[in-house]
Length: 248
Ligand SMILES: NC(=O)c1ccc[n+]([C@@H]2O[C@H](COP(=O)([O-])OP(=O)(O)OC[C@H]3O[C@@H](n4cnc5c(N)ncnc54)[C@H](O)[C@@H]3O)[C@@H](O)[C@H]2O)c1
Image (cartoon, rainbow, N blue to C red; front, side, top):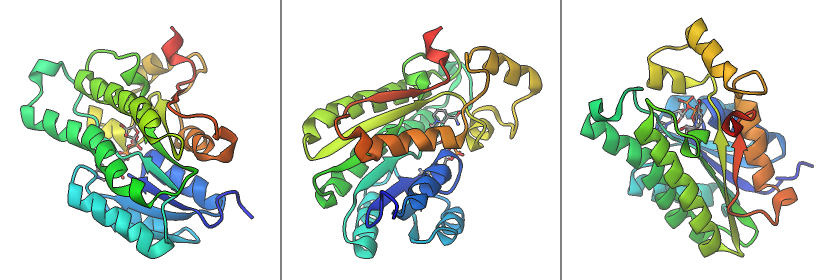
């Protein structure tokens, strides 16, 4: 028996990257998983490979889609025990004033509005003892130039997390993970490349005391811990999953 047997876990952005690893981690502990993603085909592929899961197409920035996501989870599994608000997007790395206004608005809606909408529409179905885990970023605490609006959106995720933790206590715990750079689809959106060029890769790693970028499993393990009973007294924690990057 896994520790998440008979528990329903929603994972947004569950079709790829961190989200896929989060889905697999919870499923490995017996959870029923709602794989929610804009990319329906990808969500179906992940859900189809898990013992108990459904896939649903969701744009996390859209209110109706959030309502439908909560309803689909309740219809399939009766309640919602964990919501992992993981879907998020960077923008193409550049100085802020070169960014288009539409790109700023869309990024902010996907990264920040989504947290509000998921909490608003999922929480009525969440029993006492349930939890929300948001995926922020270490850039929200230690921003570097080139992704300034993105970093600000992740600082907003951290602030939402801490405020929500108080508003939702004691029934629902709310925590966040703050990952450092990881080789996922994120690189393609932020930098336009599937793999970081060798020199950039070396420069990123040089800033991480543990000597490597994060993996999706590093993030999934931390999300899982925060949602587990081992963390039953933790709320409002924005956990650095950064190999020490933010210390220096
Ligand atoms: N990879 C990194 O370096 C890094 C570092 C820190 C934080 N993060 C954050 O981690 C989270 C996951 O990113 P990732 O690295 O796994 O990226 P990814 O591109 O590999 O995966 C993101 C997933 O989210 C989905 N998605 C995008 N927009 C969506 C929307 N509007 N509605 C629903 N689904 C949507 C995509 O289809 C994709 O499946 C994001 O919030 C990101 O900001 C990533």
